Structures are given as structure tokens and as C-alpha cells.
Amino acid sequence: MSHPIRNHIQPQDQVRVRVRQAVAGDVAELVRLRALLFGTLGGEYFNPPSAGDGWRDALAGVLERRIADGTMRALVVDGEDGHGLAACGIGSVEQRLPGPHLRNGRVGLVIGVVTAPAYRRRGYSRAIMRDLLDWFRERDAARVDLFASHEGEPLYRELGFTDHPDPAMYWRP
Image (tube, rainbow, N blue to C red; front, side, top):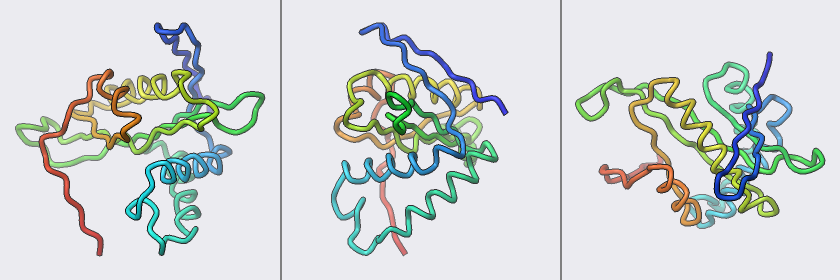
């Protein structure tokens, strides 16, 4: 199976970023970057003391299945000299009930975009997000949701994201 590599030239700095679809061999690195994201976000919500490391194995299993069946888009930028991944971004499309505010009920979700510290400020997240937004358009998502870190918010606003009108709440059993 072919995995296209998309080249994104960033106008602000004329850097060519090679974004590709993740493959099964990238799963360990995707888990590493996702753990980095949670560490960056900090706090007890993202890093509860009772979490342990079992979530990493569960995440690896879900990533393996969803990469194989194509039900999510996992994009990566390779690190220099073949040393792991520099960045990744993951998206999925969920079918919800249509309504006047959600014409077909298809909601894209940006699950996480993270760049390893040594590779930041090179346009990798921007290139990944542009590719994800194209993917959401191809799947006729009526809306795309994401949760932005303080550092990521300016990029997302530049790409057209605005504050969501729904107040967010959550419950944990």
C-alpha cells in the first residue's frame, strides 16, 4: 500500500516540509510523541497519579488498528537522519446526529498535534494541520473540533479556528 508524501512549502520561511501518512512501524514513536504532549500539558487531568503506563499499550493497540483500517488520519514528519519522528498529528471523523448547526452530522476531530522540542518552529505543525484539514474536507466534515494548548492557539486561529459556542463539560465514571 502506497503512503503519499505531501510537500508543503511554508510561505513565511520557504521551508519544504515532508508530511506522510503514519505506518505500523511508526506506532512506538506516535506513543512517545503523545506522551510528550501530555507531559507538556501537565496537571492532574492529563497526568493523573493513578494512570500508570498501561495507557501506552492501549494507545499502541488503538493506533495499530486504526492505521490499518484507515479510520483515522495519522500524519508524521520524520526526524533528521532517520532518528524517530519530529512531529505528528492525528485526526478522525465522527458521525453525530445532523441538525441545523451540523448539516450532515460529520465532525472532524484533531486528536493531537505535537512536535518534539528539538524540531519546533520549523512549520511542521502547520504542514500537518493543512493536510488534516484537506482530509476533513475530502470526508465532508461539517465542522472540525480541537482542543488547543496555549502555544498552539495562534496557529489554529491563523488557520481559521474560532472559539466553540458550546460550553464544554466532562464526566468520568
